[in-house]
Amino acid sequence: MGVADVIVVLMLIISSLSKSASGCYESIISFGDSLADTGNLLLLSPSDKLPRSARLPYGETFFHHPTGRYSDGPDSLGLPLVQPYLGGDGRSFSKGVNFAVAGATALDYEYLEKRGIHNPLTNVSLGTQLDWFKQILAKHSDLQLSILYYQELIKLGAETMVVPGNFPIGCLPVYLTQYMTSNGKDYNSKTGCLNWLNKISEYYNELLRKELSRIRELHPNVTIIYADSYNVALRFYLYPNEFGFSKGILRACCGTGGIYNYNASAECGIVPSTSCDDPSSLASWDGMHFTEAAYRVIAQGLLEGPYTTPQFRTVCPSISRHPGFSSI
Ligand SMILES: *[C@@H]1O[C@H](CO)[C@@H](O)[C@H](O)[C@H]1NC(C)=O
Ligand SMILES: *[C@@H]1O[C@H](CO)[C@@H](O)[C@H](O)[C@H]1NC(C)=O
Ligand SMILES: *[C@@H]1O[C@H](CO)[C@@H](O)[C@H](O)[C@H]1NC(C)=O
Image 1: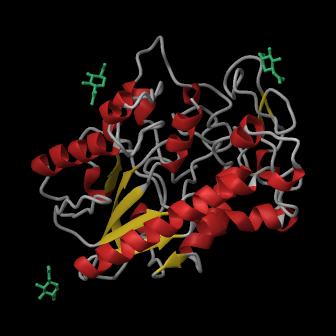
Image 2 (image 1 turned 90 degrees about the vertical axis):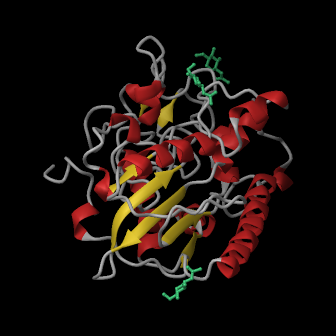
Image 3 (image 1 turned 135 degrees about the vertical axis):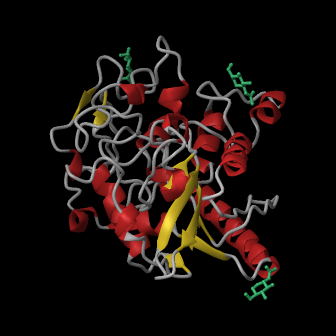
């Protein structure tokens, strides 16, 4: 389970964008896991096996009802999230589409099963999401985009790809609880995060940046943006009060108690978990995912700089809010 957990967090979120004549991005294609899922896992699940994100308090802050997103609100990774592929009627994908499924892995389900790693959440992988994308492309000529598939390369016709690095996973309540130790040296003295887990993220990000440089050289016409999720999030672990996270930066808002308010046998959304009064005063929503407030800090850092290389351009006003929710 431990191994599978880490893989879930290490899952890539790749977003592909296309530019309009005015230079802003006018459509977004997103791949990933629960950090970017806007409802696909929920739509994939049978009604007697709904995921936790189908229940309050998920969605409480913005939508006031659960939507399948793994947070209290809608902001995720700074990219406006478009409608889930599985819930789409196929007509409105011109502004983009979201293929992300909570729990999805970068490697194929069968590949992991053969190595004894079982993913209980979903059998959807990045490969499955790419297959869905190709099915749409075959049907919709308005989606003239190209994407690059990390390590392997698939060229389907477009312009900009955003690849975020990993977060400082040693600061997440789920892992702080799972790998709790009495050895004080394992913890960073400023943040209280687990050093060895953050080193894994840093190492992964270093390899990812090298790979992206290689792909940039091979494909000079495709803009490949690296989003430094690690350092953009590390800011609020170092200086929580500056970002309004005053109630304990390493504690989850929704959980069942314990030092980090995380208990794997009673996670958020499962009885007897409870949710905090003010999610915006905490960075972690459910121990694994961020609160809307934390996603907003991350979004600002990525969209307004300086945490993307090269700098991110603007997203067109027509897709800068979630379709159907702009009037709220
Ligand atoms: C995943 O599971 C579904 C439902 O059991 C099945 O229809 C589908 O073929 C599976 N996909 C893969 C890639 O294993
Ligand atoms: C890259 O763009 C240039 C200028 O638009 C074009 O001439 C060239 O064919 C493109 N190269 C590739 C590999 O698409
Ligand atoms: C975690 O939750 C379970 C189920 O509510 C409970 O039995 C257990 O004592 C809790 N563990 C800790 C360490 O609080």
